Length: 579
Picture 1: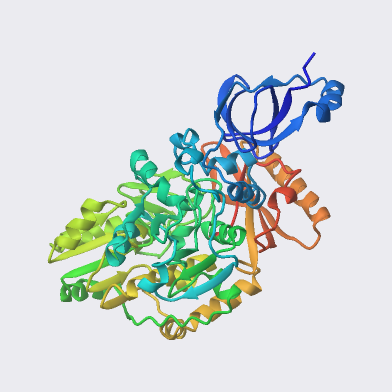
Picture 2 (picture 1 turned 135 degrees about the vertical axis):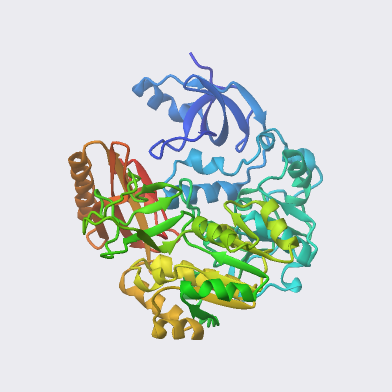
């Protein structure tokens, strides 16, 4: 029989668990233990760490345990009685669980970027501190905006200065003489040396990337989000696809501190919330590809942006102008080196000698050249071209130090250290024809980014629209895009969430998603749900993928986890910004 001195401990396991996992798991101990401790437990057959969320006397749960015939496991070891997980971080993890549809375990794990934090005792570092868990020196949350960052905005107050990517760190550190820089590649040793400053009372500036929001900050006066409108604050490559600006905002709300957004072209969400009227005036010239060869000769250093990294997109027959398309999904094929493939379903094709439409032997012409094709074209012109395939400092430094050079690439070109005389934006015709309102916003942000970093901007397209171009130059295009978003119930007016399912049996997932849609509509008749429709890609190997698009209330405290509590789905993408 268990003695009276035993306690029942509710613990959050510090491992990634499925979305539907319960928040806590109960264990018992007869040791003296405090709320907030880190302990070692046996979870399944593994020994893992856990966070003590609640402590209950045995008597409160004795009847329930006996009735349900539950046998609890003991806590194996108390690892740390005062870890670097503070109460406000638990609150932020609880919010993240509901907002991003995560398990509490997965949400909390974000707050432990380094394993050594598990063993580091906050009381040992701050033995003389009385207000260890005090996170702020102010008491009011405020949301403010400025187009440009000045020294007085960040100094003489404890400031967390957040940037979208590592490539901003060196630029801002040098510009403002910031000493406390935390990159994603910082060593564990160097990071631990900064801990006393991170949780200490001081008036220093800390410069870090978006993931730095999860560090154990204390006594902050403000967070400053640099280039707040940057597309890179959204996570596109790994689940759960955070828009980190939402996390920044909730962090500031919970801690009642100032949130200062720095952006000449703010996010649409900020424009809406603060009723801003930004006029992003961009001066440019428009040229056809045939003029490019002569125009580039006028400049020594140029940046050439191409939305596609591939060799070529949209190949047309020289005889009948037929576009080569995928037989499965009817999307234009892409040429990469000597391989034709569909970037929607990934099906590969051999290059045809005869046009499938006119049945004539022909030459296929590219009307949308990729970055690789442009790079090869420049080499044939004997231009000293460089190809930025990824964020390589070696290529960037070579370009910066070369008196004459052309830098070709895609989104990796959005680096604040890259400057040039001229900027060439290829395939801008997509802006005119695309129904994707997110693509239009991205193109505008790219133009605005380079407008302050080059002397001349050239849009290269085979088709132009003077009405749209005049609106881009005057800045009125932003109002147009926001109106389109409002009419179509897209962010920032509605939040988009995608539910995705895959199977070798297409009818099976069609039926499953239809049932999910009907159940959600029955519980939420006002909610708009699109689908089931094909995903991108819609087929990988032998598996088909379908999705539902949910348009829900754009509220920071909207409980997505509760909305989808009965939904069993393979993948969920939150805060969608690409359709």
